[in-house]
Image 1 (cartoon, rainbow, N blue to C red):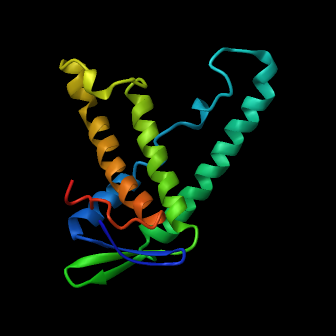
Image 2: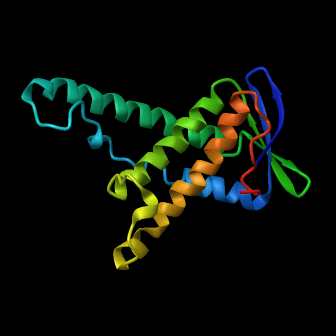
Length: 165
């Protein structure tokens, strides 16, 4: 994925067919986190029950809004334009921020499913680690798309594209 054009809040990226398929497959994992994971405190405290319920409801609503946006803008193809043998992804207004939120929630969801490890490289190779390898891959690939998007949003087109990583 490579930034082609930036005009105000409008970003245009070039993607190969493979990159488009990877991005769409990544987005199909949304939402990876359960909304029940949202908590104000790690310790159980009855004083936070009402606030935790509000947080869970707000997360559900936010995930529903982002899921609807994904279906309208990225899954149904409204943001995709064919360009020769590849594709252009056109993100207008808040689309880039929404895409970043979705990618980040997928990445964090994968990290949570891995048990929230402090060091991803310190995992011992065993049967459990092999079974968790897809979550590691999901995190790494999502991170690549996030970095390209963040660089583009900040006006830095010097970031590496995901096909160079």
